[in-house]
Image 1 (tube, rainbow over the protein chains, first blue to last red):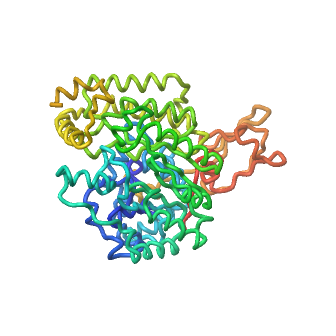
Image 2: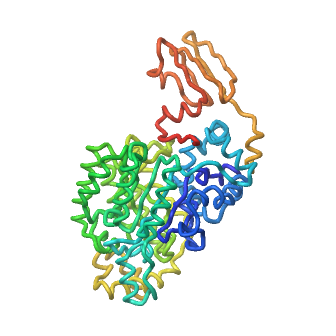
Image 3: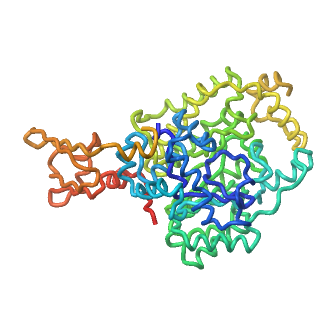
Length: 427
Length: 87
């Protein structure tokens, strides 16, 4: 069915990844990330208009692009997908697809691309900018391309043979090419991720350029921070923008967060979190808690939902974690999956959920409580329905044993409930 | 509907169901791009979405005017966030 596959994102969004290569979507499956054109050899707007024509053609023919699998998986479990978020930005809802598509202000743009082999005359309005891997944390589910600290550790313990190249935005020529593209585009939203954005020099530099170019009055800035640092100079700069979408990464309000988001301390994380909440409330910024649930943190996931519910902050994750595959929630044993699902269900059942509602505008603060309950339920659905992948447990154990030998810690100090499971796989 | 071409060939519209204060019912069939004017003391659904009395607070002088297209109006007033426009 066309409505089950179509996504308008390629008409309004693109991404520049950490190595400076272009990608058609922030949610797309991350494979062959350096095989696409890069800012080194093609302007962003040329890539958007021509380089993304094939994906637009695929969308219009009703095929299911392989790179979009994570969105389809989210919808299968009742989680609001990136596709649904992008559809909403063009006024389209899946529960009334035909009427809303034919009423969309973008219909004539889709028609144009349909007649012109996928080409568009539009420029991106929603960009994701990956600023490189400057990072002071080494989360266990992360990778050297996104964390310099993890890159150093992986190199030291032999998991990689080389350190990733410097970020594209450290090169002034590439940065200028990016700024030129911004000036020629009708930008509504720029979302920055790292590494850790606050310690990435280019983040502040780009914000300063946007202010100098007077673009700060019309652009909304989104960014994600790991809650381990505070930079008042950057906060002051952000305050000059029209709107801020603040993403705060935390996995659980429990010491397990220290093990998973290695380099952080949960008490300090909560302090900084509260500092951000105070600023965001004062400035009327939108806030989300950004989570990446893994086989480990699914156990204490209700602590995040409870915190978010109390503070009326929505909870968002990009996907159901796919990579590394041995850290997926579906690697959990049947028995622990059931217990994890029961824990989340017990939390959800404390509150009144509108079973007829589906919150698509997940960042609207008025809808936060319902959104949190729906997100929690999507993890229950995933735990119950996703095919079992416990055959990946030995790979998980090998990986954490290697990391723990470097870090001198043990998962069992944080998650004793998993001892039997991990021992059974060689821990 | 398998492709974009199929979508374009689909015939759709707005079904406006009005219940007057007298209890008498009325059904209007309009196009997706039609502007709609409603008397605010009626009970109205459009394509099964409740419009009156839900959005009565938007009426002026007893009349609710829904600018076209209806679905963009609904997007805005039902709190669906940004509705981007092409450049």
